[in-house]
Amino acid sequence: MITYSRNVFIPLTHTCFNRCAYCGFRSDDITLMTLKDVEVLLGKARKATEALFTFGDSPAKVGGFVRALDEQGYVSFVAYVRK
Image 1: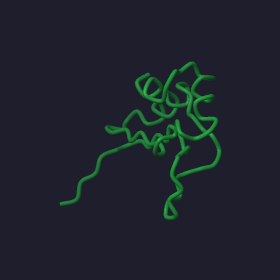
Image 2: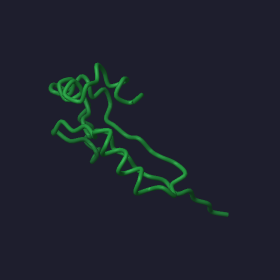
Image 3: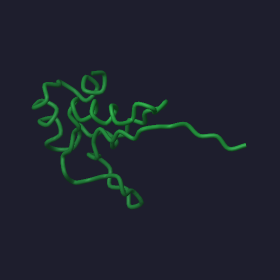
């Protein structure tokens, strides 16, 4: 038997410290979804039963990422994710 669940993919950031040759997710651009962006995405996926929050490895080690967090009012990536 094959089953499935409705889910929503939420890429909080494509920023990643690593440069894995096989990865198509990582981006050189410093990106960070706003809380409003996440809320809009969740609103569109109201019937979803699972949410997959994704991000690159150690984004705070990438130059400029901490500034992006600060601009949104967060002191760390952990504080951002907890919001």
